[in-house]
Amino acid sequence: MSRSPHPNFPKNLSITPNQIFPNLSFLSHGSHDIDNDGAFGIEAQREAISKYGIAGRIWESAHAMANYASSDSPLEFDPPFVDDPRGRFFAPLVAIELGSGTGAVAARIVREIRPNSGGFIIATDLPDVCPLLNQNLGVRPPPTRAPGNDAHTKEDDLFVRPLEWGNLDHAMSLAKEFGLSLDCWYSKVDEPRRLTHIICSDLVYFPGLFGPLIRTLIHLTSLPCVPPPPSSTPVKLIISYKVRNLQMETPFWSAFGLWFSFQPVLARRRILPVGSAARDDDSDNPEPWRQFGADDHAGRTFIFIAYRRPESMAWDVPKNDKDLTDGVGARGTPTKKGDETFETILFMSIDDT
Image (cartoon, rainbow, N blue to C red; front, side):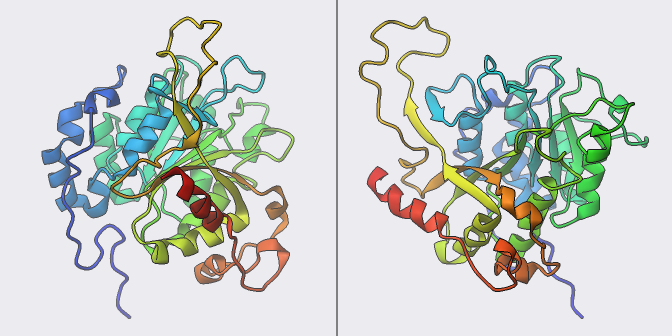
């Protein structure tokens, strides 16, 4: 029986570095030794592609995700990347990024973590891609130690760990090590932490990976990786996605929408720069909200906000990936089915182009 090709080295792979990823300086992060031009520049990508394939390139929707995560963006977003820190439900940002690749997105998001807040981001990818992440993000490989919250301090805000899609052991290992699992919430020793965000940037491309990706998203939003309601608010999924082949990619959204509700992020230009004092007439003539990415003429780019459907917690998750992408088990029935949210969003987005 022949082995499946490595997901980062598909047949006839022919890709070049992203040469239009702008303003690499905004990826800088003071507490980590990140050489932006060296880590994420054209030559670095070229070398990384030769070693790591698809994972070595900075993909187009990484810029959309970085813009969305930036607190000093010239745009304002609905909904915002994080809750208003003045709001009663504000919590430290605790994020897991799937398929981190070069680490460019994680390098940007970590800048939004308040110092000494207890927040952090875990950049994940296949085990053989983690050396690239460690190198680019200036993160040392983890030492061998027993899982537990005491392994990390509030000064730690960026980690690299392996997470193969569809691998429950990898998901459980993360939850236990970082104090996110159900056991930690009932432990008298460890202070529990709540997973607030799952970050996915440009992950919808190969149909063969749709099932494992959805399965990992289900793992990370289910017991015992998260505590039961009402212990916490739902985990927010943030997915940046660039349309490349609708016929090939739509089946992912059809299956994803059965388990997760999702909507596009809206954006408009700020009336005043970030940090400026408000005036009485500031809200007189605001720009209308539009779908973020609607003006991407090189191809539609979306950022979706998604949450696990509460009723899906009681559904049986099929063990077969093909059954999962066909909708088996969703809505509590064994029949094949699909969700139409994505098609509706595409139809509504026509007015924004």
